[in-house]
Amino acid sequence: MDENLVSYAAIFLVIYLITKKVFDKFQKLPPTPFPTLPILGHLYLLRNPGQIHRCLAKVADRYGPVVQLWLGSRRTLLVSSASAAEDCLQHNDIIFANRPRLLGGKIIAYDNTTILWASYGPLWRNHRRIAATEILSVQRLHLLADEVRSLVKRINDESASSQSPTGGNDGVEIKPALVELTYNVMMRMIAGKKMESEEGKRFKMILKELLAIGGAFSAGDFFPFFKYLGLNKRFETRCKAVFLKLDKFFQDLVDEQRGKLVDDGNMKRNNAKKKNLIQVLLGLQETDPAYATDDIIKGLAQILLLTGTETSSSTMEWATTLLLINPDIHDKARKEIDEKVGHDRLIEEQDLQHLPYLHCIINETLRMFPVAPILPPHESSEDCVVGGYNIPKGTMLFLNLWAIHNDPKVWDEPNKFKPERFENVKGDRVGYKFMPFGSGRRACPGENMATRVVGLALGTLIQCFDWESAEEEIDLKETAAVSMWKANPLRAKFKPRKQMIDIISQI
Ligand code: HEM
Image 1 (tube, rainbow, N blue to C red):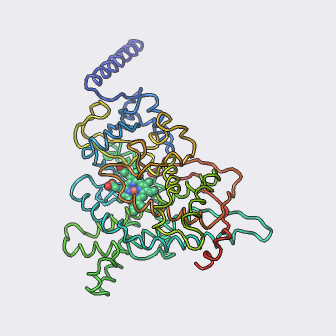
Image 2 (cartoon, protein in one colour):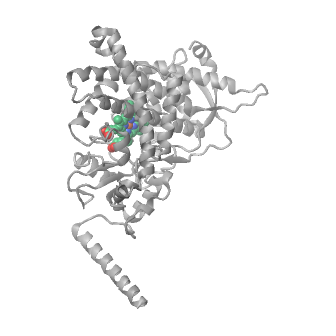
Image 3 (spheres, protein in one colour):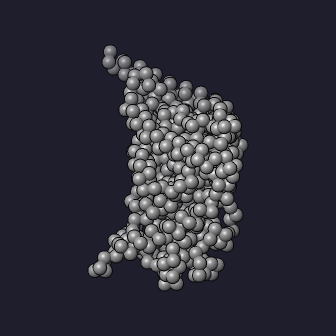
């Protein structure tokens, strides 16, 4: 009897698999890895959380650049080639301009109403317009130079104190100084002030708790029945606790700016150039109260602060690491800076356009270590075609940017740091084979700002200091959740260059 049961089950399984394969082929659906486990689907493929981009690149090596996955009950499209990416982000740009509604986004991102998580539509368009005109515009960037000077001073002071009287030198962990730079740039734009120490500490603690929750997904996103069985409670409780702290942090900022506007009176309200983002949005609250609610203001400030700090600071840490490993490239960049800027002043923003090699270094860093190795998930709002396959409405898109940027079929020796490959490339894109800021309607609105921040800070560090690694061997291990950062923080020794000592001492 038992043997019969096993045989029936085996026959049923074979018939099911064959029928499914024929059916999928008939429907022209993309290939699906074997096996698709009951209930779990292909979740077993994501077993290495910090390295999901690498796990998924292996799936693409085996099944091709367009693959259909089942993550629990979610139909997911995995895209890993430039031409399939073009299908998604150009030919089907509007169709894929939605984001899936995830549980974390519901709790932390004000019911998915923030610029990052809102679906394609009027609310999201309004956010993008405001972000473009009010925060990421060039006129707001004048404070960048000021913050880069503070960075130089901090690195100089910390390097001096890391030097022991016996001649030893542990070097400086560079990431905290870079994070402070990007925090301050963003906070000055958002709320017109620097991260005062207590406030800064408070935000960093909240950020730590947020990162500890893990990536953007929870099990409940893949198994809707978890909700009804109460199995997602732990995740929801943690998210809610972090959300309450984040919300209070931004509500305090909003209330403070509201108070300032009242104190300063209407005269200042009309002076658009002097207003920070929160003040602009509070002004809008009077003319368009249905849009500019306190939650919308807090959500916009939250996402811009979160997306604007970790991304640029991680890119600078990777670039510094790669330059320490490749001193010839560092020296070539310094030669360019010495020739074009000299030693009598610090690099200014206008100089960046005359420093093409520095720009190549930034591009090559973003190619090897894209901040978002897998783009934040998109979702299709209609049926469409990708790579010749039919993709049903409601499919979640995982676009593996890391796999495209590191594909040996597209890039010669992709593991090698070769900024020269970007010489003669105009702009920050090479078709769809290099697009660190994404592409199409959902592309990063902070691209312009990020390239300036990274260019000016990195260029100034190259101009001002001699660098040396404080470690015997520098590793390039990465870890990724929503973004990708260096697993082991870099420590380096910075010594002011003789030619720049006077300038540095005047800061
Ligand atoms: C090196 C720095 C940065 C990199 C590599 C980067 C990259 C990206 C990428 C790949 C996306 C997703 C695109 C997609 O979903 O298709 C994105 C989205 C976004 N980025 Fe950036 N980013 C950087 C810096 C910044 C900065 C400085 C800001 C703001 C000040 C910012 C704000 C945003 C926002 C708000 C979104 C969501 C856009 C939307 O969903 O409509 N990013 N970024």
